[in-house]
Image (cartoon, rainbow, N blue to C red; front, side):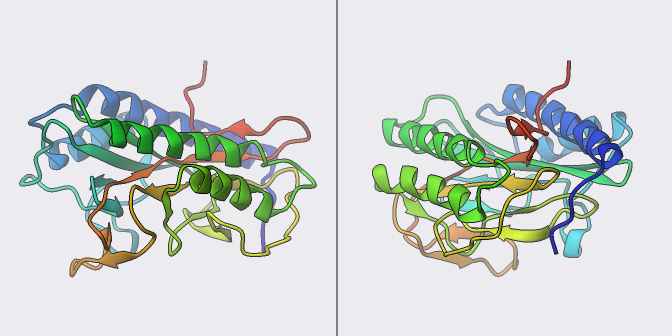
Length: 250
């Protein structure tokens, strides 16, 4: 069952989303060659706690960190480590969740580490474009497949692989609520209604669609070893334009 969010819930979610955006603001500055993913996690933890929020990911089904850090062929759910050092030419997807007043904000962004290849630049640009194509369909009266299809169309146009095992989801009191949102058409004609909040998050690959999960039971990688990018915003459906809940507030 998809739950519409009340005005009070939306207000608290917006604040949680602002805190997530503050973390990403720091990540953008901190992502440089030579930094470890554990150091990035420490920065994120500090920002979340300074803003009187709780890191949503920490302890979620046993996850040991406050952010997910996924480098190059790692798609999602990468675990930060002091031994994992960013180097020139990498791309890294950083997924952040913060809980404030019992409500969750969730957003991921991909960052270039120094100078990256033209192909990686294209991958990141197109994946971000796919995110905003999906967001544009987050309107009352549309259906979930409208969002999924908009993402799929951008990926197909650029001949990028689509991660099919993972996707977007409802957000609210929990990080993962109904509905699950695929990044390609599946024939889901569930109507989108005012008050729905969904994390829209395309994950696209330079290579094929297939993925593997490491022995840590978290880290998801492309099977062919090609790079992947991940962009995500938490989005509110209104009577008018969709509202991004995971941006900085004025």
